Amino acid sequence: MTRPTLAAALAVLALAGCAGQTATQSQATGVYAVEGAYDAAAVAERNYITGTFGTPSAAVVAKMKAADNAAYNLVVQLRTDAQAGKPIAQTAIDAANAAVQQLVSINTAAGAK
Image 1 (cartoon, rainbow, N blue to C red):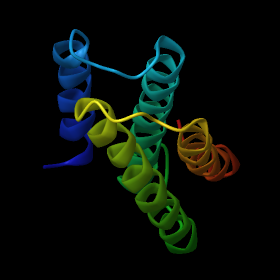
Image 2: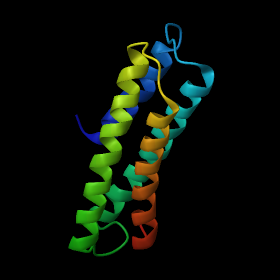
Image 3: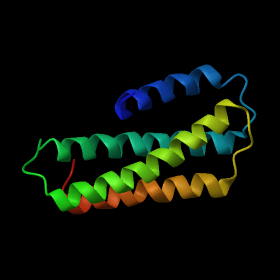
Image 4: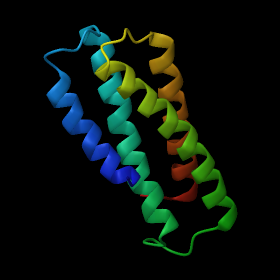
């Protein structure tokens, strides 16, 4: 599954799983916020890598991909735990958010939109 497709699937799962979710509202809001930020960052990353706004730098693409993989894995783990009804530690939300913000920072420095 591609990452944009995963982001869409995660959004659908979030809506479908709301009724049985045991995470607190604050935790759920945190998970959704991280997912949304990741989705936006992934779009900017994809635009940069495909050359939508110019010629991409191979070094920057490598940094983006590494940051994306870290963020992606943490976001998927959050969603998996939420869908399983597991409690979600604020530290896990914070770690995923930090990883997403690292990707956002690389995107911003590269001019990715």
